[in-house]
Image (cartoon, rainbow, N blue to C red; front, side, top):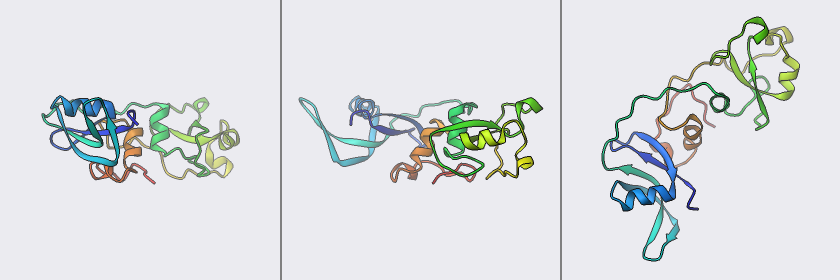
Length: 177
């Protein structure tokens, strides 16, 4: 319970970070943040205090941060593609990365050339182009236009949280089920 995640907003309500309940309570207790939403069904007890578990906290002072750069990695490709094979549509945790234009044919490791792919489709496609085998991509891969301060994975998970989604901006090019 103490390791559950809490959305941290900057003083202007911009999503800034995700932290543990423990860290959020410390920030509130130290006067650095205030609780905007809490879970009334979950109460944490210490020797001297009882705390309703925070779900969203807002910092009292503005924190300036440079715009983050969304790094290309397995995790961000999987998050962008919503852990779904881009050829057959199966949603599984057992995914691989596939080069749309194979490396052997000079295909780069870029946002526009990498997709998530189940093992079955990856073996079927091999080092050929998808159209040569009658396979089609569900959507063309591209770099997401929005770069959240929080990680892309946490952003996509947070968009499914009924309280958090009110604070997280919505963008057309990021898939959320």
